[in-house]
Length: 215
Image 1 (tube, rainbow, N blue to C red):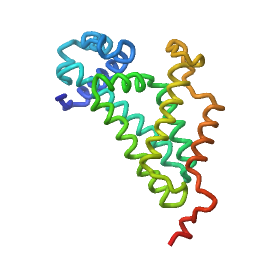
Image 2 (image 1 turned 45 degrees about the vertical axis):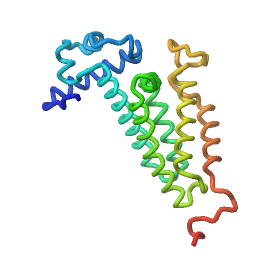
Image 3 (image 1 turned 30 degrees about the vertical axis):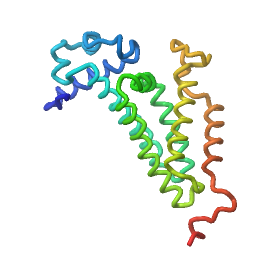
Image 4 (image 1 turned 135 degrees about the horizontal axis):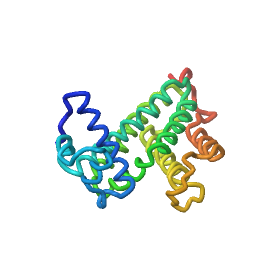
């Protein structure tokens, strides 16, 4: 188990190692990455690595967890300031795409986790869905969205964002997996088409009673 840094300097070193590991795992993949390369990128000695992490797998899990925490925070900070569920969806997806453009390792590491660390894969998606489900439940109870199962909707909407982001942020303009020439953004017309689809999927049917009309 990793050791928790006791000083601010120690925490800075740990964060430096996590950033280096994020880069190395994204560029080389888990199996080709080495602790030696991670410490080289971080600019610290091999011995320093083992002050914070016991194994390469442990630092991989910690990088996935760190990316998960940061992407959830980015989406929450963007969506929580909005006054309607539709606006929150739009802001949350925009924040997700911005984060993944800045941290393409999120996609690459999560896909590696399926084979390297299934528990990290489960953690990543489950934590996102937990918060998303709660927000959709509240919106449904308030009559802002239709009578949908919030858990099913959360998984479905997360899947939409995941694949749209992979196609345009990670693969690039050509859409052939050219990682050397990514667009780093979802084109405006694609984003608007996606949001139109989502808004229609969540819309309250004309014949559904409003929250005020429901006994």
